[in-house]
Length: 251
Ligand code: MG
Image 1 (tube, rainbow, N blue to C red):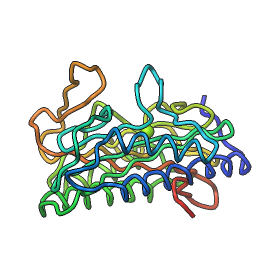
Image 2 (cartoon, helix red, strand yellow):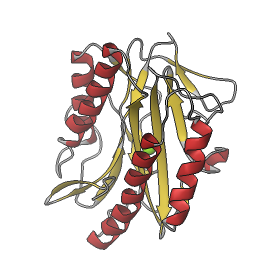
Image 3 (cartoon, rainbow, N blue to C red):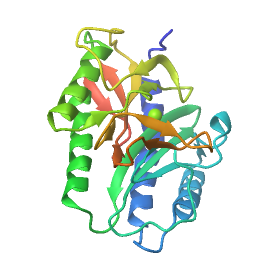
């Protein structure tokens, strides 16, 4: 059953979300093309979260071996931070969660490493905007399918594809809770009804080419089947009678 949060509980999640947003920003600002490695960014994230009094939600989650997921170029999500420096022209998705005072928040953002190709920048712009198209449909009385179809329509209109194998999710005391699936594809008017106090993660994963993905032998890393680029943007949001609130913001 979906646990509907009180206003006080939403405020707790907002505190976690602030740490997520701040950590993502500080990680992105630390990137020096040709020098910084994902493993260094992951260690930085661990320090920032610890200083804030929190715990990285992903560490040891189902055995995940790092604080954050760092996914470069054709890696869709769940990249394990490597010691390979980020290079000028790469795109890098930083995905992380924070557990603070018993409540989780989860967010992701894809960043350009130095100067990137125009086509790569367009992929980032479209994926980011698709997240906001989905958030705009997150209203009490709407259904999950309204969010899902808004994301999908915007992405496909722009010539890209939406990953099917992974979806957004409910969040709160647990990193993943009911509603178990907030897809980025689907039909308006379908799925669970959105209610006052629902907290969910909307997280479009958008591919330049085919939506098909493959898991690498490490059993975590998900890559595009055709080797083309993939981007990922995610916010934790609260749906209330007064409107939707993005919880993974710094202020
Ligand atoms: Mg998530």
